[in-house]
Length: 44
Image (cartoon, rainbow, N blue to C red; front, top):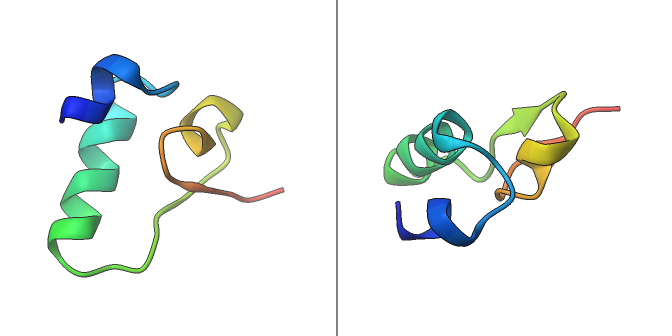
């Protein structure tokens, strides 16, 4: 959650990305351009 303070996404984006990483997911997808800056892949 350290990246939450310095990242572009909001708290929920950071939480979703970290939970996925803890469960060994390669990446999380999103439609939110701001969340894509929080380590998620953007679906266009």
